[in-house]
Image (cartoon, rainbow, N blue to C red; front, side):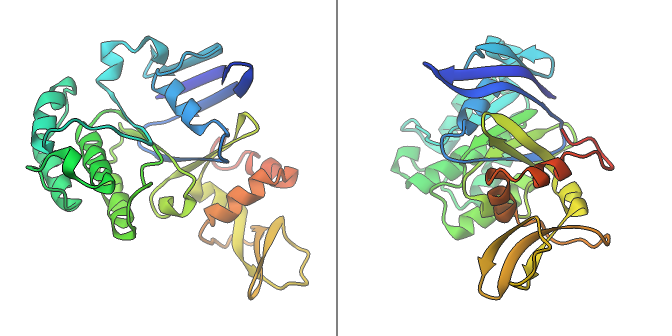
Length: 282
C-alpha cells in the first residue's frame, strides 16, 4: 500500500529523514515510535502528502503522495496531534464533510459517537478538548478510507477513553485498510497494533510484527546477578530484561523496554531483529 524509497526531508539545514525506505501493507495497524524530535510527525506528513521530499519518493496505492490528487485524498484521513473544529454539531460536521469520502458511513459515525459518549447535537467547540478529539477520531474511522494516519491520538484522553479508543480502532480494521498510529505514550498501543515501527537516527530501524519479535525475543524479570541478556533495566524484583528466545517459548512484547533498548543503540538487538525469519522484516 505504502512504498517509500530513499526519502530525505528536513527543515532548513536540519535533516530529519535520511535516505529512508519503508514498505507498509494493508490489513495491519502500525505503531510508529520514536524519541521527541525524531521526525515521526514529519514522516506522517510525507505519507499524507503534506510535505514534499527533498529527494526520493512516497507513493500510496501507486499515487505520488505529494501531488495530493483527489483520488488520493478521498482514500486518506489524517488526524493531527492538534485539531481545530468548526462551531457546528457533529451531525452538521458529518453532513458538510462526509461527502468528500465515498465510503463515509453516517450510521457508523453516530454509533462511534455513542461508543465514545459524545453528544451528536452539541457544538463541537463547546466540548472539552478530549471530547473534540474523540469526535474527530470517530469521524476518521467512519470515513472508511484505505489509509488512516493518527498523530498522538491518545493525547488528552482519559484512561477509560484510551481503552475505548483501542477497542474501536481494532474493530474497524479490514484486510484492505491500513492504520498508522504515532505516539510517545507507548503503553497506549498495547493490545492494539500488529507491527512496530521505530524511527531513530533519521532511519526506520525496526519494521517488525509483534509475533515475530516474540519469536526472537523473551521479555521478563531475571536475577540481578545474571549476565545472560541483550538489554536490561533495574526492577524491584531483579532485572527487567530482553533475552534471546532459545527454547521456542513466547512472552508478551514489552514495547517500552524494547524501544528503550533500540534507542540505546544496541547493535546486537538490531542485528537479531533484522535477521530473516519466517517473514521478511525490513
